[in-house]
Amino acid sequence: MTGRLLLTGAAALAVIGMASAGLASAEPAAPGDVVAGVPIPLDPPSPVPGPQPAAGAPLPTTGEVSGMLTRLSDAGIGYKEKGDLVENGITQEEGHGLDHELRKAYRDGELPYTFDVLNVVPVGEGRALSNVTITGPKMPAPVTVPLQLVDQGSWVLSRDSAMQLMQVLAGH
Image (cartoon, rainbow, N blue to C red):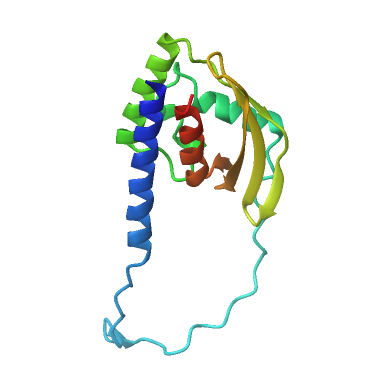
C-alpha cells in the first residue's frame, strides 16, 4: 500500500506543479497612464544603493538532510508538521494521502526507512544536491538517488525530488 500512497502523492504533486506553471505564465495587467490623477513615470527610479542581501542559509550537513528525510517518512508525524520539509509545502489533499499510506506502511512492517546521505554539494545559488542511499526492512536492496535541496530561508527538499523520492519508495 505504500506504493499506492507514494504514487497518489506523486500524482498530486504533478498536478500542483502543472497548476503552478500555468499560474506563473499568466501575464500581469498593464497599468494605466494615470493613477489617482498622478502620471505614472515612464522610467523606473534609479536604484538606491543599500546593503547587499545576506547569503542564504549555510548548506545543511549530511545529518540534517538524513533527519529531514527520516521526519518526512515518519508515520508518527502528521503532514501538517512536515510542510516545512518540501518546497512550497504539502497540500491538505497530499497530506491526508501521505499520512494514510505511511500508517499502512508502518502496519505492514515496511518502515522505518533509513537514509544514508553521502554528500551535500552546492549546484547553484540556493540549490544543493545530495546523493542518498535508502534502505528499509522490506527493500530487497539499497537504492541510491540524487535529491535536490532548495534554500527557502532553510533547506527543504525540492518539489521534483519529493516526487522522485515517492516514486522510489513506491517501487518497494
